[in-house]
Image 1 (cartoon, rainbow over the protein chains, first blue to last red):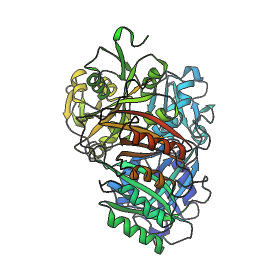
Image 2 (cartoon, rainbow over the protein chains, first blue to last red):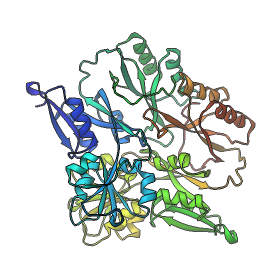
Image 3 (cartoon, rainbow over the protein chains, first blue to last red):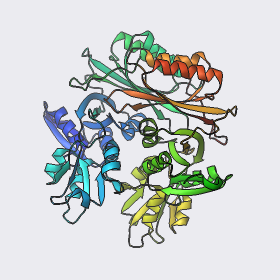
Length: 292
Length: 292
């Protein structure tokens, strides 16, 4: 059973050497934590829902590639978990291969699809025509590239290169400096969820299919002087052209003003889901507002 | 050289048997068209930009999985092409394998990452624990699964199964009925771009990092009674938390009212890009507005 003897079981996207593991180690470092790895995001999220682990550290958004759709879609449609924390990690990718293999000898490039997308320009210019294969994580790619009979290049962290005995052929191959990934921490319970004074709240809602309804939903935030830190539309998974909105904003659901906004939004929306209030990550890359 | 002798060269995402090919054949059927296949979306889009082909039919959005990020990001950041048309295809996926292979014998499932995502629930329930491999297209997956010594299942169209001599093990495995994909047609020229009376316009813009700026941008549409058919945020690819908005709405840039809106938006936005005005697809799955 989870959370016995004061030990907190924290899940992450494995194998060893992923950015997700880095985020989990950082998140759990001040508590008595036991780390459990899962091979993909759905199994990781379902493991919290079923009680196999207490919390999961899951990638939610990357600065270059955007929302990690599977994470946010599962949170909205498939499980009833709450976001209880967030972490932002700077992300820099390397091209790596088994010792001795040169960049010209690479026959296939392996990585997580998000990492491949984050290095798209590098791949198009420096490895033009070399096929890319999407695998389950950057660390899984590094592990596969360590096979001495292969001609794989892998894209992942410098830590994964050293963990799997690979040589770094090129560093910082992402399309842009300032790359970072936001991880969220998922839990079954809203646990403390206490106001820290520097909090964020995440919700999902649909707007009616009446003219002006998104504009009117945003007006509720504007009238209350609330900064949106993120707005994202995702398909409702019904018909093309039907969307739900994922919104992050400053404030905590226990504050009166925020409670008022949430009540108004939930009353005005056919579909509304509260996803959590949690402390804003402090060493965060400077986030600017998208308007309110 | 392209467009010689009245022949229009239309590119699509190959190999044979992709949904993209279906969309291209439908789009080009009334003209003297020559079809050219490309192995991935970046090569397809760069082929129009360089003049190797006249137009490309490119997937832009799926009802279940949302925006095809690479398409929209390239259109915004990497090339200067215009959207000159759109097509909506109903999408239904099958699980297929070489004749004789049963569902229990499958050791790995191959498909395009979007198709894997669209069948996520089926994969989690009926093929739990079987690894999935993302490949460049649904048809490429079918082609690989035809290898008589393999134990692959492939996810793709019923047409791809028959094209590559595979057996359909299960039909309609997508997570939801009503699945469809919107393809856009890209061209170097704005060509006719004439008002048909039933048009759509696509733009990309950022809002200032001042409170209320997205709300005020949407107000321009609301005040002019213009329906948004889509609003999507994508990362600016600079820092986490900086977004640009992709908006589709009803109307044509040659109409006075729309021209006024575009002028106002481009004046008020640090970044603004006009992506095209084009006839709305007619047999379209019913699209409802997201508000204006």
